[in-house]
Amino acid sequence: MSKIFNNYINRDFSDTGRSNVISSNAMLASSHPIASSVGIDILKNGGNAVDAALAMNAVLCIAEPHMTGVGGDCFAMISVDGSANIKALNGSGKSSENAFASNLRNRNLSVISPEMPDAITIPGAVAGWSLLHKEHGRMPWKEIFHPAIEYARSGVLVHERVALDWSKNTEKLSQDNDTSNLFLRNGNSFKATDNFINLNLSETFKTIADEGSRGFYHGWITEDMINKLQSIGGKHTLNDFNNANAEWVTPISSNYRNIKIHECAPNGQGLVVLIILAILEKFNPKQLSKADYTHVFCEAVKVGYYLRDQYLADPKYNILSVNKFLSAKMIDACVSKIDMGKAKSYEESDFPDHPDTIYLTVRDKNGMTVSFINSLFDAFGSGITAPKSGILFHCRGRAFNLLKGHPNELNPNKRPLHTIIPAMISDNNQLIGSFGVMGGQYQAAGHAYVLSQIIDFGLNPQAALNFPRVFPNNNILDFEKEFDKDIIDDLASRGHEINYPAPLIGGGQIILIDNNRDILIGASDWRKDGLAIGY
Image (cartoon, rainbow, N blue to C red; front, side, top):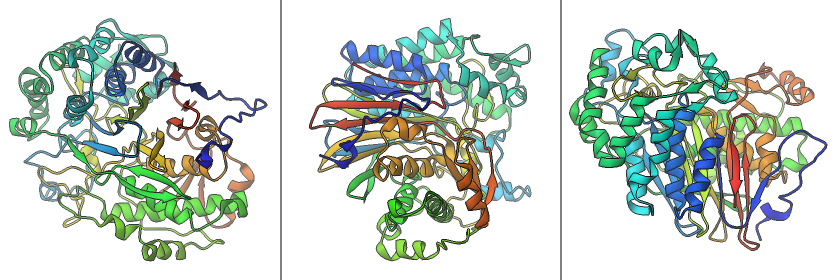
């Protein structure tokens, strides 16, 4: 039995928080209760984990419109039979055939801002949904979208965390008339308990349900998107949409204290998770003070993100040797950079900060498990909406840079470096977990941090998600307000620049699978409105 399960139900009821969810049949977790409710209904009515994940995600396009949408990208991992035979799906869209960094450099631009048409890559999500369902769905494709169609038509009551995020984006939502007409009420953000309706998105979902992904990348929806993009100066073409595709890719993995961690391959930043964990494994957290452990973790994250910014990109344009980055020589070199008494600074990253996405995970009664993530990159993506379809465009193209010759330079038909990363864990060729930690570029650090809390310190899934977070963000340590102040003071004395208290960092969902006892343990982050449900 994996050591993860030695003490996985150990809630301290003297602390505030929530309990793990426990079941023996099926389990799911998402960042919104309505999505979780839809998913459990799908499972109880004969759908499998893929059907439930896709139905949940579609509903989240209305329930959390600032985090996810039809106009975004997705990644997924799937274990069809509960084994460690895991597949990964890359549903990230590409840049336009007319996208050139040189054109922007000629305009004396050094970054791609959210509202620029150049920030809008072709949405890859629907292609990803289609491929995932085509090979592994059970329910008819059309039925999966019934809940989303109904919620888009009748509305979703805005929940508390969603309302908070909405309130911070009023100015952004007012810049585009089509966006403000949909996402603002008399110039104000939607508030908790307001009913949000997106009638045009209901029609879009109907078309996708009836015609499949072709209905999105061809026909009236495509025409609406192209017209909008060209009206703001975009050079996107019909070919860009007609040629959109998702693909299966081989996951990457490595062991952390004899537990195998599975991540999506680049262009995602899953490799950064494995680098951080490989550095952490050179230390014994139980022999370190809490301040020393936090220092080591932060220094490992800095190294991992520095390497990310230098090398990660679309693998078709930048063939990386993953094994090289995880080799003993490379990891030892990274460890040697850590000075226990002094913070190290790295070249300032030009990667845009962005805290927004959704993550969900589902395990069905037959063992099929899905780890799924869908995102608009920024809150409300680009802030630009195609009016007839109700589609809010993401701005994932911001993840490209404009550095001549860089692996992640903006160029035609290219997938950008991606931050959204679903993950799984296995032991002895059996899947023992599916998880994700949301929060934009925090995700790689978040994966490593939450896993370390479980594997190194014996926290159960919910406690690991509850635990106060730190994120080394461009050499500045962001600390949540519940973080131990003595540790923060210690790190400041080592030269770390401190941001305390920082806003809440990310979210997350976890399913742990105890195969010996046929028990599923679900957890959902308190930082969002969501929950885990099992039956």
